[in-house]
Image 1 (spheres, rainbow, N blue to C red):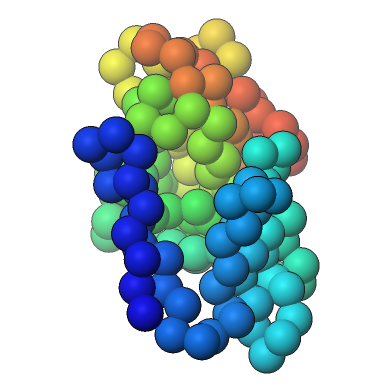
Image 2: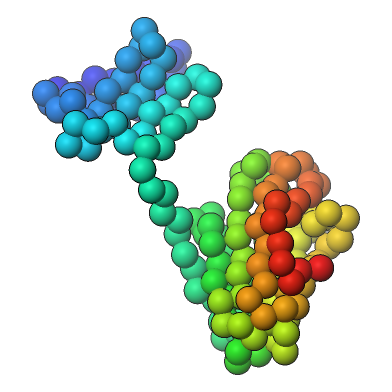
Length: 162
């Protein structure tokens, strides 16, 4: 049995029941819960979401043959191998997904000889600069966007990155 829930003229989605307890939407508790084999794995409430178990991120491998590489909507972790030459990564606009996290890692241990350059989009910045480099072997940067237009990418963690 499928139910449709709408608010005004906007369709918010389908609620699938079919006597399957794996998907539960409890309107009185303002909660959506997904279960697997009777174990609650993912719960969304008004105060946030809770993931019970491991999280897997999409990994994207980038080499100098793809350079310059423009980050796409589905990218989260970029494993960059610059052993064949320097690599340029072009970031998306900060306002595309406010609060978006990106992790860029020198996976080829070659950034000391072939830098990985990270460029901001348009007039966005990265803590005041339009471009920064991973310059040490095994270096990385974890970025988060502030959602502005123009906006800033802030680093949350970094090593071998200026």
